Length: 360
Image (cartoon, helix red, strand yellow):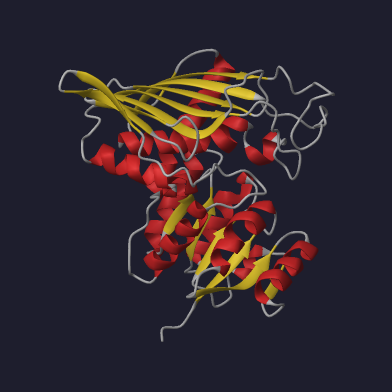
């Protein structure tokens, strides 16, 4: 029997406890052997909950990556994704880094360079690719069912669901608000379906219209206006080098009833596809002179929010383990994730300058 993979977790907060650790616990061929968090009590609790207290506990990631581990999961605020990932790769560990890949495109490029130098695997936590509806649509796109996809909408809209825990509201540590947090999922899904990673330019707007409200009706309790320094909503208009157009919509707080997250709409020359919600898919087109719609989704998947788990996260964990063992390939390549970061950065820069941002 092959030995079990040994994992190390850096960052034992919500994303670790609600997404990655439960998924790893279901694997027969992997265990978590080391836990790290700047708050020692969090690391120790995760150790008790997921390793029966048998793992090693650290408050300094530089010590964890020296351990005898196969892979490291980087589950920290965005500001440290690049730093920890590069260090872990340099220490000879495979890495799964949570989304977004990094705060900046330059950081993402350095992560890829570190991957190349180390010869290890690097993937990013875009688990929405693993949903049943996403897998079906990707197969249809690859088969040419939609034809040339020239218009798309990437949507991640919440009405009042601002994450009030951790550092989500801290622009310095996160790099932004809903655009970089949940808009990143919608954009990744859209680019992946289109198989188009060559942006020409982007126009963006960000808003701070509701983050000073006090009686908010927020799903997770009222936010503190004093620390809500990121945007409450952001929108982008992206033109790709081949002429295709993508509209990106993201919000944590917006006066709308169109609440959808991590979904895409695709319009091609042969057919189109809509995700009315995550886990639901409708394909439309014309056959024999008649308009048709096809609903192939089983409706079992759900969008991931902090505090929930979903089947897509289990498949993400399985795919990473199999890639490490040489039994399969990664489903999320860092080169793709870096382009997502590049476009998000372009939207933020356009919003700041009031001008289109052109990608060289």
